[in-house]
Length: 99
Image 1 (cartoon, rainbow, N blue to C red):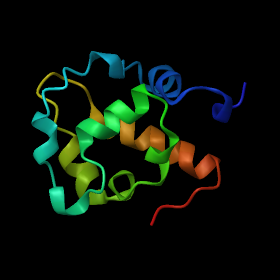
Image 2: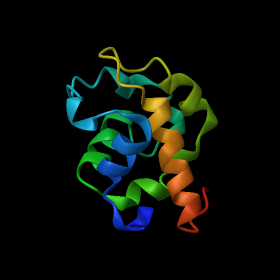
Image 3: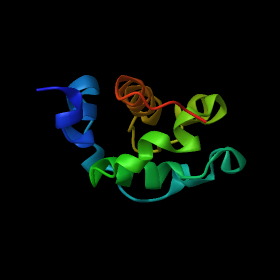
């Protein structure tokens, strides 16, 4: 099965061991680098859970400032930076290029 045939949820889970369904939707992560985001981090996680592939072309995904800040953005231990890195690789594999 190619990665494009798997849901984004499974892709992230398989490659990181992280379960985005464990997101508490507390939105504490939403205040990270707001000027660099078109999709707030909490929404990015929800997009993965819902298999919304538009996340793969969001500015948020490609911002190095957001990536650095995302390492400690989740107060509940979800490593958002690892999720972003997996999504970046998936976007590249599908021939999508960041802004």
